[in-house]
Amino acid sequence: MTYALAAGLLGSIALLSFSEAGQATVACDLAGTCSIEREMSRVRGPQTLMDWAAQLEYVEMMGGEPRFAGAALTPNEYKTFGGIGAVVCQFGGSRRTSTAFLVGRFDVAVTVAHVFEHNGRWMRPDECFYTYAGPAGQIRERIPIAYIRTQWQLEPDSYGQAASDLAVVRLAAPVQLAMRTMSLTRFAHRQAPVVLVGYRTDLGVDALKRKSRGRVYPRPRKDCVPFTHDVDSRNVAPGAPLIDVRDNVVIGIHTRLGNWLNGRQECGTRGNAMIVMSEWLEQTLRVEIASTPRAEED
Image 1 (cartoon, helix red, strand yellow):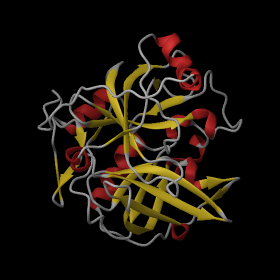
Image 2 (cartoon, helix red, strand yellow):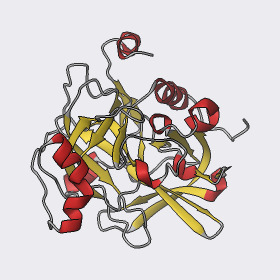
Image 3 (cartoon, helix red, strand yellow):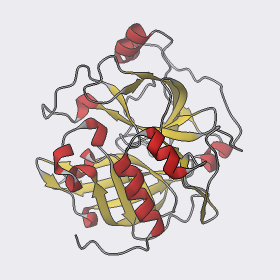
Image 4 (tube, one colour):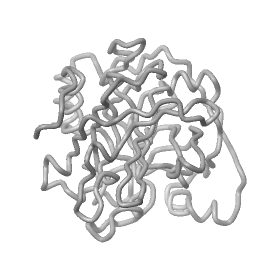
């Protein structure tokens, strides 16, 4: 589906399902009009040689200034970004974590697909759970997973393709402590100032939700995904939303290509990538938002 076609189907609505106080409503229109206050301040941290090396590919190639992670969310930001949690899967003595964010309902979350697959084996829903941490990093909720929908499983021809590394997770119960879900839209621009909000890959070490700032750029080689970003994403669990700071709308999903490709697909470069909303993700979310929870039978 092209962007023009999607826009025509959505009419004047650009976003998929901003939800607050338990109901799905639309927060923004195609003109980008939103009620959430914009915050444009930059966050900086230590600048070591390894810090610079981690982002050298983007800073030198794209131009611009590197940003560094580590800023805790303010109380207001915890409300604004309350729809961001994490999915943790445990199997064979190993643990996999992805950041996930609620869209449209308090029991529907979006994340990446590759965390649910290991050496050709897909995780069962009972091996995973959704967790939500409070402002001090304390785990406040731990919700079982009802079922998992991944594009790689449902469309086998897309397996291993970074642009299709998408999953929609249905929770067994709604998240109680989140005050709102996240707004998600198709990205129709070439660049954007963004904030990345997510958790560490090891929640056992640190469950504090943090933010990092930067910019989204087109990738010079578009063989895997069309966009990259210069946000400091070290130790950030994949699946974290990339949020346009001008309206607090999610425009993409963070992943790091070199961490999971393992030779399955050759990319021109490795490192940060932004996965954008696809036709598959849009249609899957529409179905899940409109449906009632059910057991996995497919």
